[in-house]
Length: 118
Image (cartoon, rainbow, N blue to C red; front, top):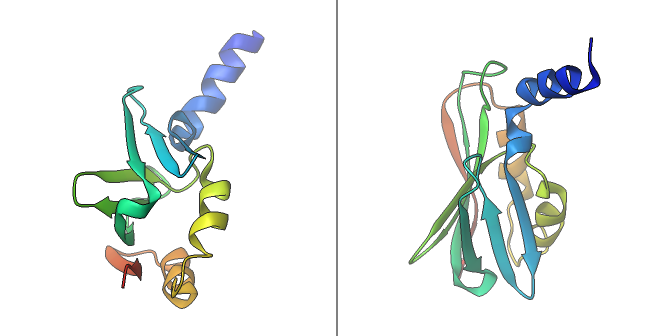
């Protein structure tokens, strides 16, 4: 089997890695699986939600929603850059780690509000 075929097959096993999120100069940038880029200043985000579904492992079953008045950044758990984002948002005042842990254990269709700007 060719290296390129092996690499392509591994990518298909993890569709979440076709998404990426980054933070630079207090701006969050999301590149989705179609290579569309959406940006949002961190200060404009007023709610962070984790939505779960019962479709895993066949499709991504945990989705982040960062909501501002003008944008919604929606991306799957496991996307590139998620760890850096998680480190930053866990430091927000009143980020609800209990809701985060509940979402990570959830295997049904549900929504967990982890943070709301006060």
